Image (cartoon, rainbow, N blue to C red):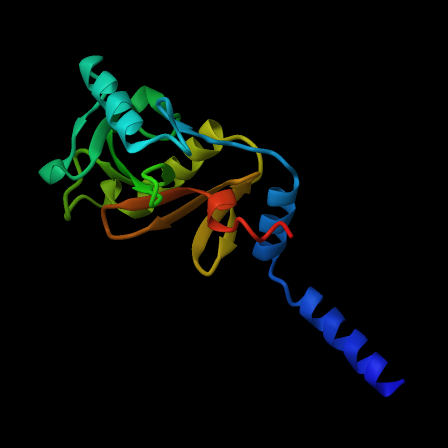
Amino acid sequence: YTTKFTLLFLILVSVSCQSDYTKLVKSELNSGKEYNTIFHGLKFGQSQKEFFETCWNLNKKGLATHGGNNQNVKIVLQPEDSTKTTEKINMLFYPKFSPENNIIAMDVTFTYVAWSPWNDKLKSEQLFPVIKDSLLKWYPGNDFINVKNVLVKVDGNRQIQLNKSSDKDVSVVIEDLAYKYNNMKK
């Protein structure tokens, strides 16, 4: 009897110790909802070749160019793209690819175009709520939750992490949890 009680107690403790984040991820992955859209025609699962073709087309339309040292793609968000700022914002991005060369995540960095170390109005602290607001508009669904000082939003298989990475940069990672945790549903 004592062994059964101890086992039951341990099971209850382990289930109740799951974080809100873990519960949310499991719930969203088990929901069957699939959100593969990232932005500007880019999606989880696209090949590296498709990524470059999409970016080339964005460049031909004048929407994108290369970022610093040709290591990412840059899009300049205009003030009318947000209700919370009157400043232009640089959006730099580049995907993470699976071993099969398919997009599994997107690293994105946002910075005010006119950022300077002496201009407190254009630091990441002021940019952060602007980016959070924009992400909630671009990706409706669940709100962000705080997970170890990083804001995280999970909708189906798509997770968005948001944090201040420096005095000037706000970092975002958009990733496919179905790829990352393909065994978590079980």
